[in-house]
Length: 490
Length: 107
Image 1 (cartoon, chains in turn red, cyan):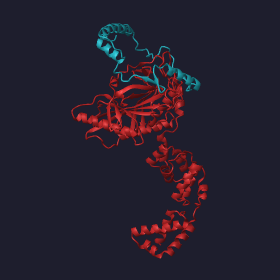
Image 2 (image 1 turned 180 degrees about the horizontal axis):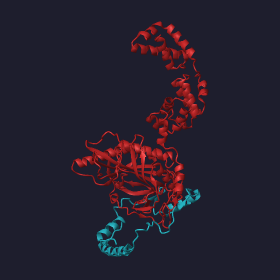
Image 3 (image 1 turned 90 degrees about the horizontal axis):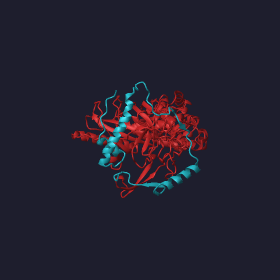
Image 4 (image 1 turned 45 degrees about the vertical axis):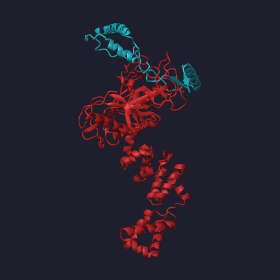
């Protein structure tokens, strides 16, 4: 994909990972498999895993005489993605991308070229920068070939085994403008994009299963210049960590070449995670001349304004909107991102709206709710629990224990607390206990009242420990400290 | 009228043949160069028409939005297709098609 020369400044606050005077120019191509029942052009199942060649059909095997028919759901998902990325959704056509490789038995891949479905969008990242989206087009996935040879490496392959289960799976390819300025922003972009794809139900976004794949177009230039220099496309980046490493490696390689008076060649390179370096791709791939032409087997797609409006109306609140809702209730950006990332933002928001303390709710989300079933927690119950905590009826430790049981059993916090004997301790009762303890420990009390900070801290531990012992851990440590300080300042 | 085009060269044809993985002899290159040049001349006759006001045609039928619902093939049919498709492969190993090395150096 060619990088366009329209540029906007992105607000990037990355540390400079390159020698002084150089900056990175990165464009990302993300391929996401669409969450459909069947393939792009055939009724074979779109399913990960399974025995080889179980999800096949004459169309995706490229058998003579077959004709592709477009999966309407795949187009709907693609339009939904385009709208979520602020793209213009337009009349589009299919194109044949011609190349020879056994994982694509027709000897061409059906894709989109000069008239893609979605163009000219953008994505706002949590950190405040905006990344331009050049296009998001539909295509079909390829099969999978396993190279069987002496060392298992492709260049020594004796022969290949081909499984066409993945051939023809509907894909969207989302291409950014070359506006990303460093590995952290690249990772942030992929994370936010993945979160959107999952939220709108268009893809499961699983990098580990290959349903979300990232290629990085990397080049460098003198800081502040607006030129675009020769780029290399780095493939085989299978995790966010690899993406960051691959970008840094590739950009430094380019700087080294320029500083040695040389320059990089435009080529496809493969990231080797174990070796921590990229290598040139197969020689055949360098002849990147795919001779695209309009596919005569398929007619144009011209989505009506009504259809687009219907799809737009079906898009749920996107991650940014959901984070903003929590931030509006006093959450920090990090806490909001964590809650949305764990799909616990609706729960947290409802609990806060029911009157629970926002900090306490978000602390539970961050520390105590990274467990299966947490999404099913009743927001009213969570609000009650937090209120019991802030009223002093439960200590933080007790609340954590009650919460774990609430997630497991779906019970109300009052019932769980009662079953554990975590009865609310009457303030008067606690005061009596504290006063009694002070009267029984005059030496310790003297050291608490008159001692330096260190002695005071030590004695505070003593008194709290005694009270906890006397109440079998039911007293609220904070309330005990408050009482001690109150008595000492009399 | 557009500029007259440059005549096709054997280098052009050699490049296209290479991309199509066709191994042509020097004689064949010469033969196909003149034949393809004649084909381009024929297609070039279309250049005499002024199409400035004509919308690009992506497909002769004038249809758009031909879709199928997202419904899988029934399992029994899918199984039968699998059996037949694998049986049609020249070489099959572990339910996968066995093919020559993918790099094409031999071609």
